Length: 230
Image (cartoon, rainbow, N blue to C red):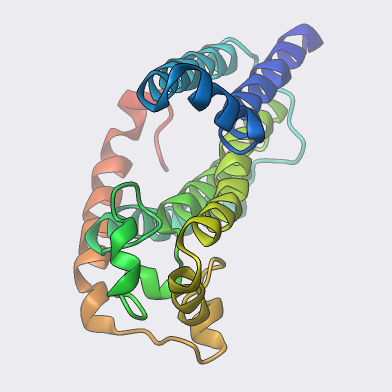
């Protein structure tokens, strides 16, 4: 394998992470907002996020995928196939429940109680969905390029889940403390410790949506990535 391709991919992954975590999660954000205003900052940040993501994708597509770190055997592929429906349930179910961690829903923290649906399982269903999605693809692909590409996306979501908690705690104070007491960041932690519970009727629609999305993805994956899921 030409290491120059992998090195560029590592650079692309680093730029992608820096563009997100190095700005939005550091004092740099406050400096930029005070300098140019909230809306211009969001515009610049969005452009930077898109540019670094596109660069990461293009670099990944241009990197050879023959440098395997482990043998991509059927057990790894089956593990990925089992993880993906759960990831899709988390992703879609996360949009089906009120959640004060979501943009524009911060006011829900005063009335949401212990949450509903996926929020009972984790405060950050979308972020954990991306983590699961990334892990599934790393397991199935097994090559160094996939580890860097999917690892960058998964790491951003994993760190993002904890950084969001820090931001919300600062912004919401006691209201956030109460919400955090009966929910958890790490999936199922609040349920396993008795601070929350699963209500299966609230998960019916997320499960159905996740399975339908998985069926569609299973059929269309070859057209998106060129790789069939079998």
